[in-house]
Image 1 (cartoon, rainbow, N blue to C red):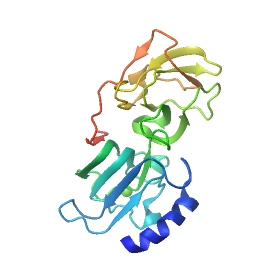
Image 2: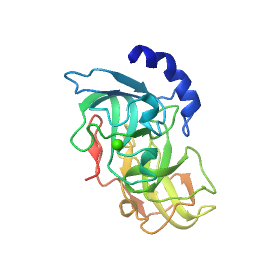
Image 3: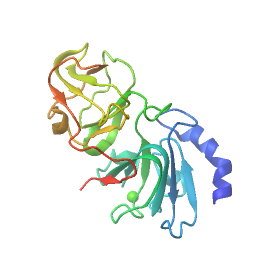
Image 4: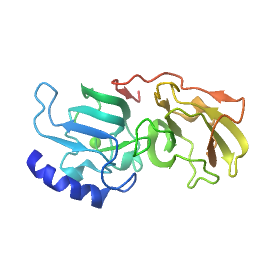
Length: 231
Ligand SMILES: [Ca+2]
């Protein structure tokens, strides 16, 4: 399988990548059929995979290595946009782990968060639903009028504060959010809207810097090399 995939994967990336960028990103994930002690066949991905069936790897992964980047795992295809389900995240460089019960042989889609060009570059990722599920909007620069607009959960990467607004043109209700560690560029994972003061609201514009005193920090600092999953 490895030899076969090494030939067809570049083609699949080009054809199937629905979001992110086409071709290589700064994020690389390996999924293994077996546990780390006996990994068996495996695939390497570095872009969004809406359905692991496209790689003949649906509900197969039992362990994984994050070679680099910020990776999101979903129980269902299309990042749980059709059926909500279990989701998890993991970030860092060169960490491997067996998937826990619940994710073992259950992962159906994966994608990365943050800039395709550098996983510790400044960006904000906005998801429709909590725990980074369903549709997303990505911004790496000041954005006057985000569209479509969501506010279920966010991931802040890099070393910048961001102010998010519930109206276009940097108007309306606003809060300032930050990465978990602005010196070392630890990403900030806000798993639900209440964690960034946006319950019942959507994010319509966003810009770098802190333009309000209404500040939110991640409720926990997600360490590299540790899997966090929705309870
Ligand atoms: Ca599944």
